[in-house]
Image 1: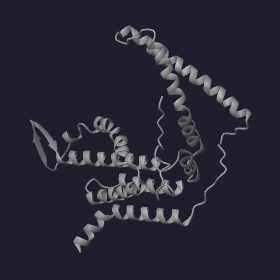
Image 2: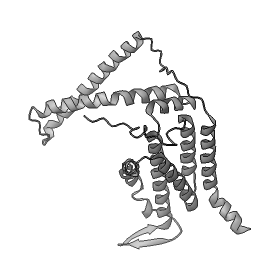
Image 3: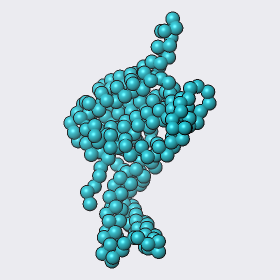
Image 4: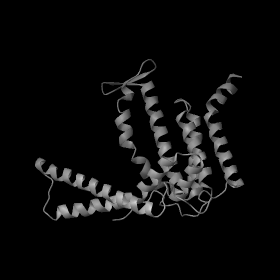
Length: 260
């Protein structure tokens, strides 16, 4: 099978790629945090966040289509959550559409959820697309992420391909025995495959863990190179966080200026 790597474009040479993982993690986390805490009516703030994002995307040389594909994955989940929000509201304006009442407050809330969800997914995709996975894990460790989360993510990324390959082999074996999957009584076959896959994965995990213990594994992956934070990383983080904070408070600043 063809493996998919979340850091597919991480080896493209660009100014964003050359930055330390720790600086990028702090910068993107600050961007996402400020975005999700922005009031729904602060349109200028959202414009500032997206301007920062597209500037980073431009200098990263990551294809826009790749980012859009990852963002579109979230659309069904957003629709499941927000489908009925425009029809709920109290006060404010309302609109009639084919006999249905749409509330302005509900539409604003829908816009708020969608714009923040899209931005969060796009920002995380850009982060992982400009940082090799091992550097990303080291960066998370340096910013204080609990070791258990880093260990789980590392092993999941390493062995998810093995589990998928095992699933594909079981599927080929099943199809070679004239499995059609058209009848309700054939769902038992799917259940047996799932149970078999779980047992094989569990047994494989036990064998791998025993092999790692025999080689001195103590629960933490050791790396030889520890990249120190340099002035370029500090300057990048300071710039991005400052621009994000300025965008966050742009709505308030505009009100103060107009009021004075």
